[in-house]
Length: 305
Image (tube, rainbow, N blue to C red; front, side, top):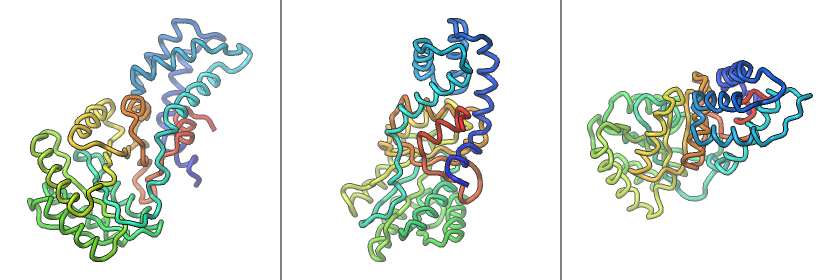
């Protein structure tokens, strides 16, 4: 299955929702102000965001659509073009390449978003691209997080550095980086806690981990990824804002997109934050983490083949 086919399958619910909405709104051969208002409201309800929905409305209103053409198809095309233009610069196709020097990746996300699973899938892709990968279990707050990361390490055949639940996350990070340096690892992926309800402790924890990391490499962490759950809707906007205050995010992974009809949240995030999108979770299988492509996402989201 090619990448577009995977995107198409993953965004089936979103595309169906969009098609149904437009079909109920666009009933004439021309789009009047009432229809434009309804399109804007519908896009907002699909989690595209107020700003993006307003811009799309303006684009549709200014476009002279030929009444002899299929109006819905033309609107879909305008929407697709808008998304590609907005999100093309946010691709990170180089993320999973092999690297000549040690790269340290910090991964964040609130509990339940699929953070540890995403790390496992990410590790698999990096390993397939000839990287020597080490997992670092710094989410010591939850015993289940350590166990889950170890299961992923065993499943894909990479090493893991861990400690007992409740251990100091910074000390686990130190051990991991020492191990990575001594044994010539290419990539260290650090799993961190995501307790946003206790931001002060979380911030201190991140600062300690960052301080330890910088002892090994002053430019590190080289990547700070935030994992988001698409089914959480507009709550993810708050998560990006809060985590970005704690430590600047360099890339996003959006999970569970196959389980929601509101894949438009990705558009809202792109518009508001302009943070690169590393990959999308489009299912539960090991191979269901896909490198983000703006064109494939746009076509799948609006249902264009």
